[in-house]
Amino acid sequence: MVKKTNEYLGQATDEQLSQWRAKYGEIYAIKVDGHICYLRKPDRKILSYAGTVGTKDPIKFNELLLQNCWLGGSEDIKTNDELFLGASAKLSELIQVKEAELVKL
Figure 1 (cartoon, rainbow, N blue to C red):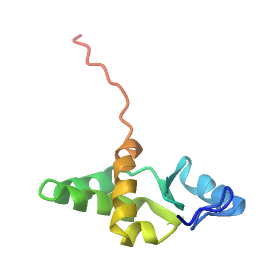
Figure 2 (figure 1 turned 180 degrees about the horizontal axis):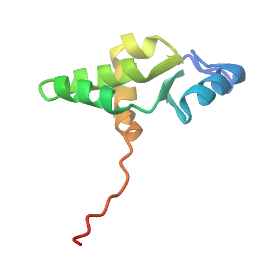
Figure 3 (figure 1 turned 90 degrees about the vertical axis):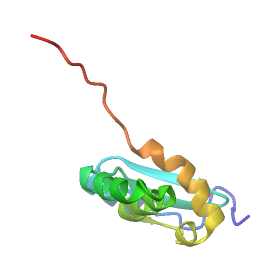
Figure 4 (figure 1 turned 180 degrees about the vertical axis):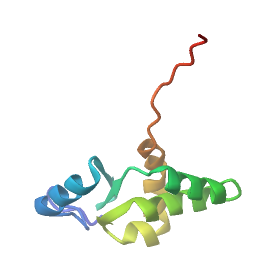
């Protein structure tokens, strides 16, 4: 494990985190086995693109979601299968759907 005291491989500076928040609003971190990556929420275009490919290949869906929402962090998460699969288990939490109500008038 690469983890040091409260530090992760790929950890961003406070300044970088502030810049990403200013540009993207909410940002997220996924930590896996001493590595960290930073992601933004996917938009409709990203979800559409990943969803089209993901119907035939669920792993590709996660790859596209990770790739297109990636802000920074340990590149090993993209290239190491074990780290990628660990991060993949959390990617669905990026997709937040608001509750809607249909009312007949």
